[in-house]
Amino acid sequence: NPVAFSEVIKNAKFDPPVKIPAEYYDENYASNGANCYLDFKPRTQYRVRISKRLKDRFDNLLDKDYEFTLQVGDYYPYAGIPTGINVVESKSELRIPATFVNIEEVKLDMGLVSLDQAIPFLNRDDLFNSCEKNDESNLFSVRRPWPVETGKKYPNQRVILPIDLKEVLETRQSGLVYIQFDRSYGECPYLKSFLEVGDLGVTWKYAPENNVVWITSLNTFQPIKIQKNML
Picture 1: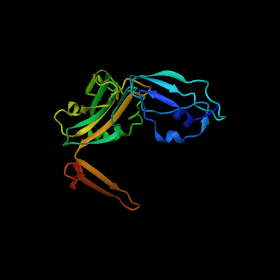
Picture 2: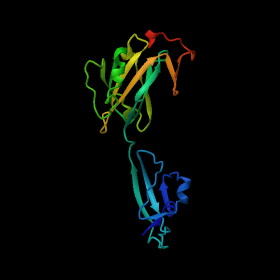
Picture 3: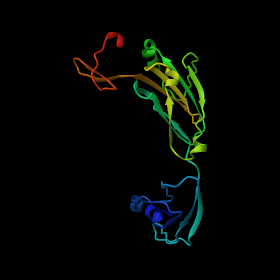
Picture 4: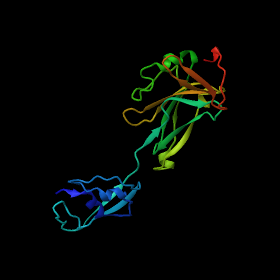
């Protein structure tokens, strides 16, 4: 029989205790099932007890208390980087963050794109397609596995590790960097990022008759006079 969701919550006990969202006690709709999202701890066994005081919509009580065991496993593996087009300040540490949860190893490809080829490169339809792997051998100068081992060292914790752009930039302080980050899980594992490493920040104001482009230094925030050979 249908049971109000708040009735289930009021008559459920967890050991060890679990914090119940306050709004759950006000949800009085009745159904034949109850779905709730609770902050269970990973790798933890819970004992759940449903009191015989639980009533259905017709005021029928349970015949007895019911108990069962709930075994909570690990968080799903996760790995991610900033995708799409990004800007990295050239006078910074030249790193971008990669975030991991329960990941042992990913694959990292990095390459430089010349300024002359930047526009045709960015116009590619599949540039950021995470379902297709880019296997251009002449594009990537860095192709290596990255054994992060966060599942082994930091189980069920969110860990942020840096991708050092100096590995592909070498002695350069600026450039256009393309990254392919293979998470090795899921149907579309290939995260891709295009990084503009430099000191120019651009603010563009569009108008019906003309436009205004404001160029500043990312380091000093001061306006910069642009020469044609800088664009």
